[in-house]
Picture 1 (cartoon, helix red, strand yellow):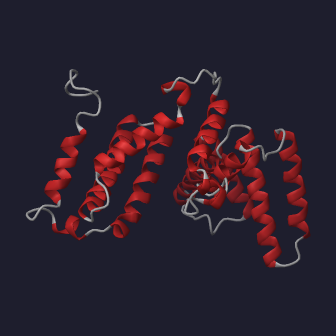
Picture 2 (cartoon, rainbow, N blue to C red):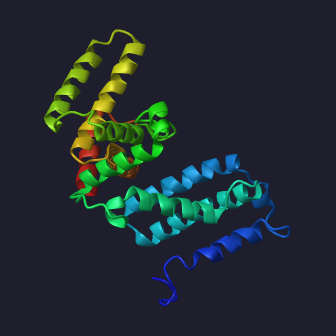
Picture 3 (tube, rainbow, N blue to C red):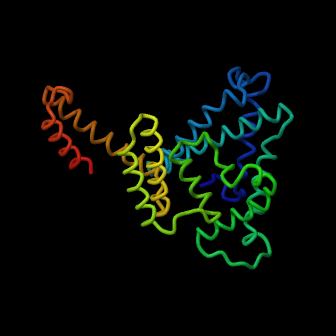
Length: 267
């Protein structure tokens, strides 16, 4: 909640911009003044992933803090760009404001076409985006807007989503499930490491597509599995230590016993 209920939403952004200006002023912070867009790149990635972690953790207080850190990176980079004569924070805000209005003509315009459901809204968004991009879409293709630097599972999801928006998709989840079996068979038949790697990639892409068709993000699904594994592993590790041994020293039966106990304790 805002500390001033009478203030319009977003009214506090100028205060953050002013903090940034002070940090970059002659009497500001030496470290901040040394930064460039390139040196800030890893911080943008780190803050974005910490936002995701806070969302997964379901902690509003942590999410508020991490969103603030990510917002600061936007303000920081905008200030650097402004000093280079490129653009400033107001240009960033104005650009995204106008884009959102343009991309939602059924909300902000006089378009009478009804958009019922998220899938149809996404399809209309892609149609509107294609109209705007024009020659760029022809030059870059429908998948050109998916950043190659995305984590691979997330990129696979977005690539599949973009392809589906132009009609290039399996008819249903059953068809993709059959594709998973096909890719598994091809993985089993791979004769070289290079073939195995290629088939493994195809299998992962098919699995991501299967999840997408079911409305499940494979990146989130894998993070959930990793979190469960990590909790169970730590529980088993501590149980072994309490028994004056270690997972390495136990035989397979002993490790399995601790793992089953860990599953019951952490589920």
